[in-house]
Image (cartoon, rainbow, N blue to C red; front, side, top):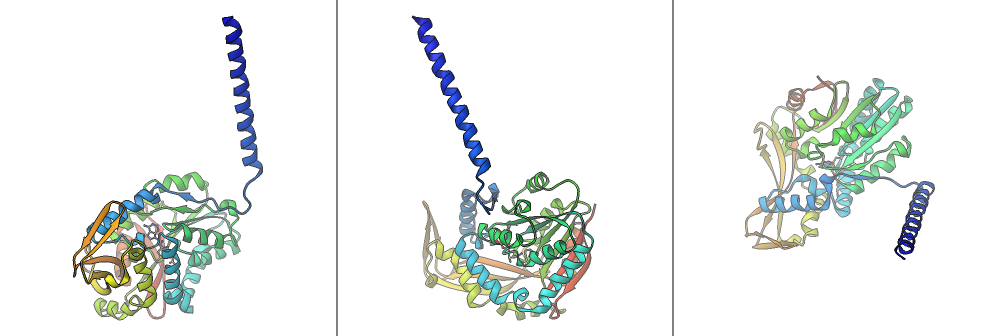
Length: 363
Ligand SMILES: C[S@@+](CC[C@H](N)C(=O)[O-])C[C@H]1O[C@@H](n2cnc3c(N)ncnc32)[C@H](O)[C@@H]1O
């Protein structure tokens, strides 16, 4: 009797295992034979998981200083930032600015051949990186492209644009917070072949970071032999204060205001609860530096609720929404050298307001 029951149970178990095996095989076959045509495979690094973003927002609202990376994350923020870029970026509006990116890309490409990886840190929509990809593609390099940004919408745009020069399976997009993705080097090693050249771009990024925070991150990512194209918004002339004050209207304009207000609007703060004001201030870490700062000044007592947390802003207090450093050429060259990035050559626009530096990583 027992034997009969046990045999029956064993038989059922064997049938069930066989069914599971067939099911797994057929599922994997379906996965193998039906890739989604043209799909883009994004890696979302844990540094950009929603709970991390939320914690950063709560921290910023509590300490009244919003981390600049929080200004680009939602689709509406990305779309409004693109409007600022199209209306105000010298790269879009001035031929001499496009020329410095083109010439520096040509010069960088001349040193690279065979397997080449372009790693675009804070790629935005990738329009500046396309010049380098085009140049390397023309010179016959076998390209890989790694666009990295906190904005999934912008990484997607950059990846799709790159398909003109790089085959889809050699594009490795990643949504990550550059300042906090400590394992980025390993992630790159897993995707990029051990032989070949690597060139990083860090275009338009340095203004929105504390330099002593981000430059060590770059220094750790770069290895001897790597190259980097690094672009900077500059303050031309000998009088830094006068120069930065002259540039202020490039920031205090309707498109930038609309972009900066998105974070507050999306979190329930009405635009008429206060006013955005722009000023020029010394850097908190290095007081010889100058930066343009935008703060939202509350006109009346305001309470902002996110989840279960309430943030109270009495009248006449403010919330720092944005900052952008403007460097002199000497200041930026000194900082690059201090963090073992040797500037090899630079290209500066006619008005002296933007520069691209080709750097090599030192041992
Ligand atoms: C001023 S835009 C520059 C975009 C592009 N490189 C260019 O020059 O046109 C700054 C870019 O950096 C991204 N970004 C800001 N903070 C970041 C961070 N911590 N990690 C990665 N990307 C970041 C933004 O989403 C945005 O696309």
